[in-house]
Image (cartoon, rainbow, N blue to C red; front, top):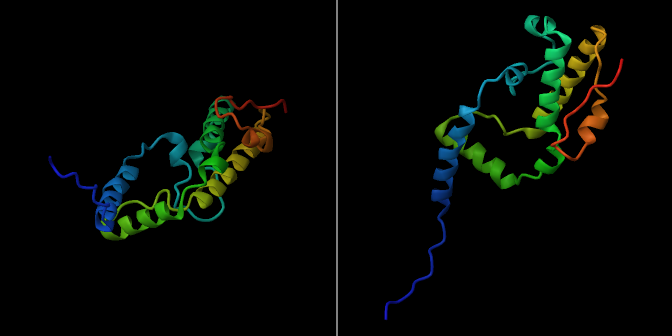
Length: 150
């Protein structure tokens, strides 16, 4: 009868190699309009670009809906482990790559700032605005955010 050997535990070096390989996936993020407005490494207060100032109510409302849906479940997603952040940080140091995703709290705060600026712009244009507290507190990510009357 053949001897059955227990599986060998994954070595730490193999884990680092896998983390380095996967960190390149973040570089493949699409550059969609709502991702271009506030890059994760941008600093300072958010200001509308000339292109964003030319957006009409419909387009600005659409961008806000998408961003709200992207960050609405932040509280449940923020539970990522410190181990995953550390592994990604090490992978970047070893193999290079993007720092996107290293600071999810900072990215979330930046997204809130963008939403507030967009909402003020909607008010300036006399468009319907969002109740951001209500929309971000919603737990069902399938419910489309709806603007309220001005």
